[in-house]
Structures are given as structure tokens and as C-alpha cells.
Amino acid sequence: MEPLRERPVAGAEACGEERGPQASEERIMDRISLLLSLLTDDMKHVMQLQKLIMKSQEESKELEKKLLDVRKKRLQLKQASRSKLLEIQTERNKQKEDVDKMENSEVVKAMKDKLQLEIKITTVIQHAFQGLILGSKTNWAEDPALRELVLQLEKNLTTL
Image 1 (cartoon, rainbow, N blue to C red):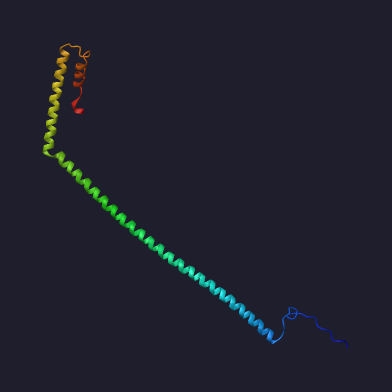
Image 2 (image 1 turned 90 degrees about the horizontal axis):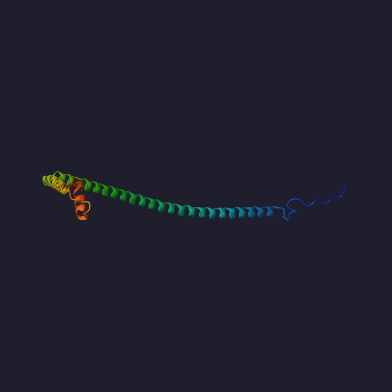
């Protein structure tokens, strides 16, 4: 028979770990401790994310409130703009009616008729003066005062 040889060291013994129920229990406790540590870290991370979500929701509510305020202000400005436009149109229509009334009034018509009559009389007088100057055979072009008078008489009064 051969003598018993020593077994080579392998497995847990090679790593320096002990074998047996106590070693197994310690490994389980280490694993539980590691899992609890990871769980705690995950919970901390979840809490941080929750805080960020709540902060983002608050900012979102504030921005929505600001947007609502801007929309209200825009609506107020739009209504004010419509009101002013309506006032302007009303005033313009009133002015147009006033001008129409004035143009159609008897006083204005009488003044226009009188002005037309005065223009016709003045035109006849101008032509008479032109005829007198030309009939007198005076050289009106040499005399500056007479030349200015003749040229003045040629102006058409209806275009003034």
C-alpha cells in the first residue's frame, strides 16, 4: 500500500478562506452587508432623483404661471388695441360726416358760388386791362413794372 499523500490546497483554502460552517456564515454576512450597502446607495440616488423631479415640477409650474400671465397680458393688449381701433374708426367716420355736412351746407354753397362769380368778374377785368395795354401800342416788354403787370394779368385765377 502506498502512503497517503497530502492533498494539494485548492478552492477556499487556496484563497486563504476557511472552510466550515463559521466561514460560510461570515461570507453570507459579508454578502448581505454588501447588498445592504448597494441598496442604501440606490435609495440615496433615488432620493436625489426624486428631489430633482420635484424641483423640475416646481420650475415647470412657475413657468406655466408666467406663460399664463403673458397670455393674459397679450389678450388685454389685444382687446385694448381693438377698442382703440374702434375709437379711431368712429372718430374718422364722424369727421367725414362733418366734412360732408359742411360741403353740403347752404352757406358753403353760397360762398362757392360767390367765389366763382368774383373769379369771372376778375378775369373779365384782366382781359380788359390786357386789351387796353395791347391796344395802346405801348412797348410793355421794355418797362419792367408794366411787363410784370401784363404777366400778372395772364395768370389763370381758377388754378390759384
